[in-house]
Length: 320
Image (cartoon, rainbow, N blue to C red; front, side, top):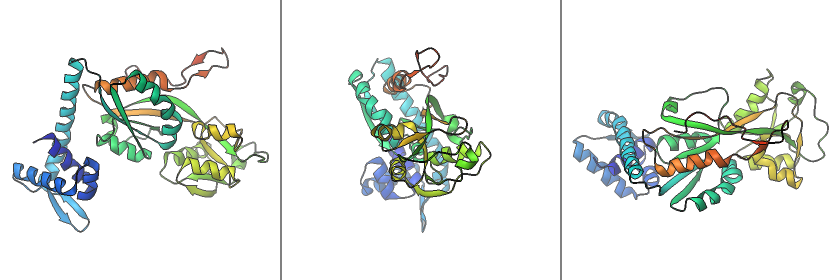
């Protein structure tokens, strides 16, 4: 079974649709159909059945799916081991990131990395946290940069993924210039109107958690929107207050479009993490990128007690 056929098979199994699978593996629909037919002929069994709701795996297809995933993982590790033994660090990597992290953190950092590693080509995909994790599990991206939940929530994929917190990004309470005095406690603050992202988004989780940790119901929302950039513009227009990561609004604060207000409670932060798939042998190019991100992506902060620079995130013992 050629790895190419297995990759196409898994794309169809995940999307349950030939058209979407073709987009995922960058093939025309007829090629996807031909590859599935070739795999079925090789194995002597139908792998999919067509239902009104889409394509579904047959019992034979369900038996093949976990084995196909393992075979592709081994194929990737074999290629990585050969490259490592040959001392080659070249390759192509795909980074996934939240929009705000991509623009505020990765965009300024990537040119320096690429200048120091001209043999590594880097592509980027921007998506929400849930999509990034699915892309990572499906091997469609090599590493994801996103904010993580602080509540210890785990998924079945956690054992297959490694993660490192790069920094703890402060959450800021922001308002339009000229905003009146903010109440001195969270209960009074919760009576005001806010602009937040939609339920299910990591930013919305941060917003709800900030009040839930104090035993206070989240405020009424003036609007639910799909991006932090839109939140910043609505807050600047006076639609309500916002609680957002600093990196998302630093430029607007510098331009005077927003002002930062004191948060009447325990300081809120969001862990910014990089997440990648565990492998016995990691791609040399990815090892280079992970090491560089660990050492240089986090902006230096200044310790108010000593005046010295320090990296705010605690490092784990092993990168891989």
